[in-house]
Image (cartoon, rainbow, N blue to C red; front, side):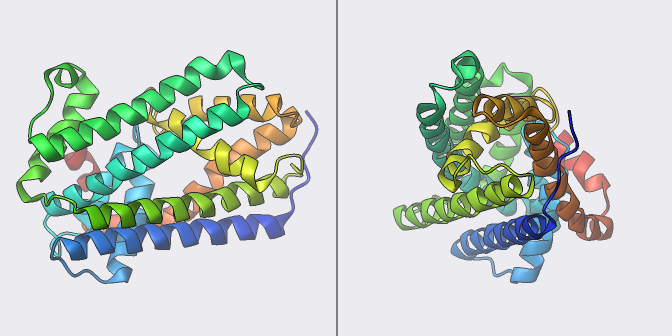
Length: 285
């Protein structure tokens, strides 16, 4: 492979887009918490957001994001914070699963050999969303899901959070879907800027918009922390099938992971104040 020239203007725009996403994530979480009766400042929610994102960067299926609930404590009880986060994720999973299906339909003529992996990722996302809804609505873990070690541990945390959970009203569900769609659009720009930074001009913004949920589905397959390696391999394969040179595809996937982790390091501050043991303790519960 040859060295890829990087346009740093687009790198800056990528980081700006990712910061905007984190602010929107924090606004969305703050909105749900307010609906549950908890008033939290935007700054505190944003710190918790970055702490949760940093933890999720190194945990299977990004389950470490639940650390954000601990970072909101004592303003918000951990059980209530976990309930809010998982309620949001249930909606987000459905939207992303729908987006992944659109991505499959858009790219199916290019990656027939990778279709089973894409379908697997979508299936895991749908399973996660259905599981969360079942726990929130029924207050119990389905027997079949309870036999899966990782899923049982994940759903057990949700069951504990159910004690202070509040049913999401139809109005707030619609608003959460709207929030998620806006975030999806911003993410499309983030990936588009990364593509432009390494010279990928043959894929439009719409292409990256549809590519992202499809690739993201791979991070929910709990094989490696946050789908590390597995997700990148799928991403490189898809880009290569879209006639992107291999060197540019590899550089893109590296930047897509590295730049986000780089900005997520902001989360070191709230984690250092709370104690890094919160990650280990929360994940063991």
